[in-house]
Image 1 (cartoon, rainbow, N blue to C red):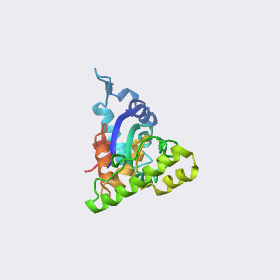
Image 2 (image 1 turned 45 degrees about the horizontal axis):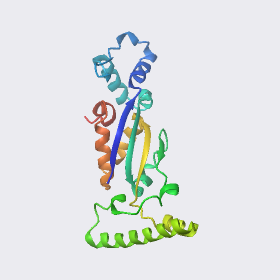
Image 3 (image 1 turned 135 degrees about the vertical axis):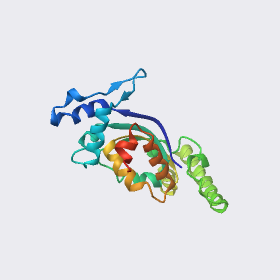
Length: 206
C-alpha cells in the first residue's frame, strides 16, 4: 500500500518567468493568480511550457524549478526502489531507529494487503515476536533486544517521509515506473497525474 497527503506544488510562477529569459519574451507572459490564490498558466505561457517540455531536458530546465512537497507513507520495500532517485530529491522520514519501540506492533503498521491467509498467519507470528522483543527492550533497555527488532523487521513495514522533488524528476519517475509490477508505483504515478499541468508537462502522452 501507498498513500500520499499534504501535497503542494511550489514556484511554478517563477519557473515560467525564467523560461522566458532566453528570448527576453516576458511581455508575452499571460499567466495569473486566480481568486483562490492558484497560479494559472495563460495560453501563451502554457504553449511555451509545452514546447520546451517536448524539446528535451536541455530546453525544459524550468521544470527543475517547479517543486512538489508531499507526505508519502509506503513500505520499506518501496522506499528501497524510490531511493534510486537521489538527484533533486530531499526527504525527512519518521525514524525507525528512534521510534520503533514507541508503540505496540500491529498489522496496520505494515503493507499486508496482498498477503493470503497463510502468509498473514506467519506475519502474525513475526509480529508477536516483535512485540515480545519490544516489551523486553522497554523493561531492560538491553540493546540486544533492539537489534533483534531492527534485523527481524519485515520490509513491509510502513514508513512516512516528507519528500520534496521537482517536475523533471517526476518525468523520470513517471515514465520509468508507470508499468512497474508493484502496485505502489501505480498509485504514485496516479498521484503524479493529479498535479497541476501534469498531463502537459509530466505525462506528455500524445
